[in-house]
Length: 268
Ligand SMILES: NC(=O)C1=CN([C@@H]2O[C@H](COP(=O)(O)OP(=O)(O)OC[C@H]3O[C@@H](n4cnc5c(N)ncnc54)[C@H](OP(=O)(O)O)[C@@H]3O)[C@@H](O)[C@H]2O)C=CC1
Ligand SMILES: O=C(O)C1=N[C@H](C(=O)O)C[C@H](O)C1
Image (cartoon, rainbow, N blue to C red; front, top):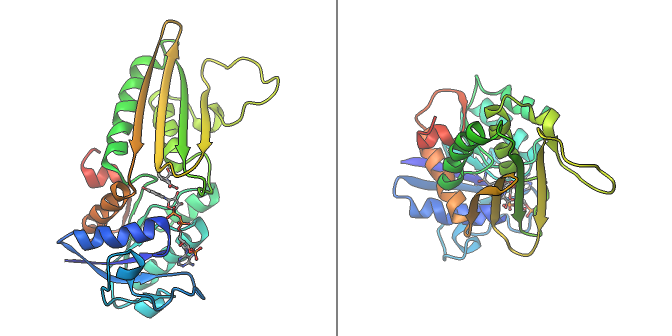
């Protein structure tokens, strides 16, 4: 039985994760943590998730629940995640990180823990997106050097704070790598005014933020006469939450290292 703590239990993913842990017979909910000073500290986690009392109360620090879990699941914000990762390193815990929007320096800091903490870090925990990444690799190898333009289009709910999504960036990286291109050099994240025609090698990104869209990603390979679109649409956050709980059970048995969802699913 993997004892899990969820940080950010008041959030969209946090509440969904409470339900996902409850539905997994091989996982138990050891703790849930809200932001320090939150009025939800002390609230019952089951009631937070809309499923009735569970008898586990929301804590407002990791230190308060340090003995109650083995794996932390973190879907919060970059600086919060890095602080929690440091806590895990100090206290011999494992971690599953779904947080997106880390900048290069924050990515490097995270990577610095790979020899000390067993961690799964993935911008998208759904099985479907991780399979899609494999399909993209194949498509890019077949089409990318044959005159097909590559564009990544993503859409999310109005509350999302980072752009492009972590998943869109990962899709861009997979495609770029398959074509021996570097996303830092070839990614185009803005087109406005007299920006001129696209170059053959650029990988363009477009972002939609609207309403309650859970998460949609399309990679377009377009040339004169045809286009191919590979699309993934998530219609429920439960798809991410189930993946995260699966990752928590998986990483509970692993030595220190930085893993991703493809490792968890067995696609690597
Ligand atoms: N990898 C994946 O599969 C997925 C990744 N994500 C990513 O997960 C992250 C969270 O998304 P989402 O749930 O929609 O965002 P929310 O804003 O709904 O949730 C984030 C939660 O973190 C809480 N929080 C902030 N600071 C702390 C702290 N110090 N301690 C404890 N809790 C804290 C916030 O509390 P408060 O409410 O008080 O501000 C909030 O409840 C984003 O980066 C998103 O991109 C999302 C879905 C899938
Ligand atoms: O913020 C979200 O909601 C999501 N974020 C992730 C991302 O940035 O890729 C994954 C998912 O699409 C939902």
